[in-house]
Length: 79
Image 1 (cartoon, rainbow, N blue to C red):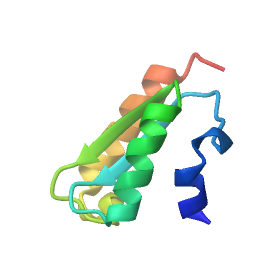
Image 2 (image 1 turned 180 degrees about the vertical axis):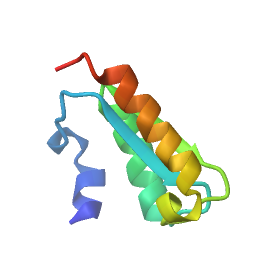
Image 3 (image 1 turned 90 degrees about the vertical axis):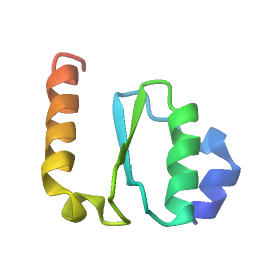
Image 4 (image 1 turned 120 degrees about the vertical axis):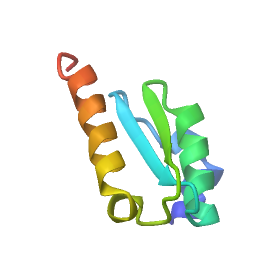
């Protein structure tokens, strides 16, 4: 379960650039997970969408798409 992942941070091993996005008004569990992952994953970036909720990608699609596009462009040469 997601709560087990939060408690056992060693179980999360992603060695690639990772973009973590939550909404400013997201549910508590999602924010806790994102915060933990952003400190655990060495190559992560954490972005909070202002005025976004749990579905930040549909709440603020322009901001979401711009941030994802920036991230992909920045990391396109890395493999």
